[in-house]
Every structure is written in structure tokens, then in C-alpha cells.
Image (cartoon, rainbow, N blue to C red; front, side, top):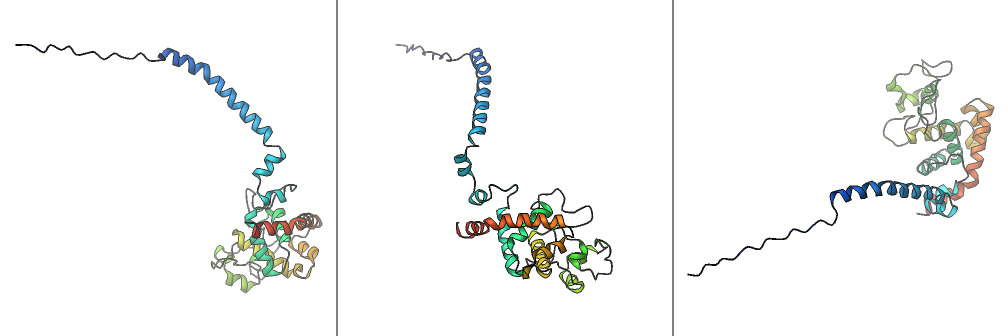
Length: 236
């Protein structure tokens, strides 16, 4: 009887190319090099990104048009200004100028002033709701209940300038559309719709410096108005 006495071949274990010690050494060696390379790339990009052709490539057309402005008009607000301006026959650039001066295009930390002006376009509650409201006096902060402050019927009753622009049943100075339409309504009735801009601006805030500031931005925006409108509405 023949016995099958085959010996099983032992599998040879392959030696690792890199030993754990070598791996640790390489990590320690390459880590500072990687950090240095990354820092150089970031530094280099910081310089390259300031080159005109790189900036022009990364900027939108609206940003390019306003490249000389200290604070650019946010593109998303332009259609609202224009719609409100068309409704109340005032320049849309005047609304943008007021928004710029009042709350820096709504970028202020608080949309309530120390004297009580509220919202994106800084209306005193009595101006928004109406000065014939029984609680209104002095500067116009009043003591108007919150339920009445945004009620279109209450505003109509007391002759205020607040507008429910988006038709949601609320006229809210903290809603961007309502605020801009309300400002357009006020400026229109104060004379802007008849071309009396200085008069209207002064009525909005009784300060010669305020009038000067508004007109500065108004004229600045007027210079690029056609280009902005063309870009926002017809270039997409």
C-alpha cells in the first residue's frame, strides 16, 4: 500500500516594503514639507487673485459694474427697487440710496435704531402706521400694539405709509419688500414722484447732511443704472 505523503508547501510571507519605523520617519519628514507647500500655495493665490484678469474672471457682471463703489448694491434687491419705483413713480436708484444710508443694505447688526426707527428702511412706527394713531407724539415711536403695527387696515385708518407689498396680509417694516415699497410710497407722496427729490429726502429725515448723503449715492447709482438694469434683467 502506497501512502500519499505529500508535504504541504508553506506559503512564503512577503516582507513589507516599508517597515513601521520607516513609515513613521517619512510622516515626520513629509508633514512639515506639506505644510510649507500648502502655505506657499495659499500665499501665491493671495497675490494672483488680486490681478485684474483673475478678479474679472471671478466677479459677476453686476459686481464689475459696481467695482468702484464702497458698498455694492446687492443684486437680489434691484428687482424690488425697480418694481416699487414703477408702482410709485420714483427713481429706483433713490430707493437704493436710502437703503444704503439707512441700514447699509440691511447689513446692520440691528434694524432698530436707538430712537425707535424700525426695519430695513428705518420707519418710525407712527410714520409707518399713521400719525393720527392715538398713541403717537414727539418723535413718533408711539405705543402702538404689535397687532396694529403691521395691520394694513389699521395703517389705512390712521393714514400711514406702510405697504403690504407681497400681499400676505401683513405690512411689515422688517420684510424687505414691504419696507422698500413703503419707502417708495412715502417718497412719492413727499414729492419725489414730481421730481422734488431734495424735498422728499428732507421729509424722510430732517437733516441737510442726510440729504447730501442720499443725493451722493443716488447720483452714483444713476451713472450705472442702465447697465445694472440691462445686466440683471436681460443678460441671463
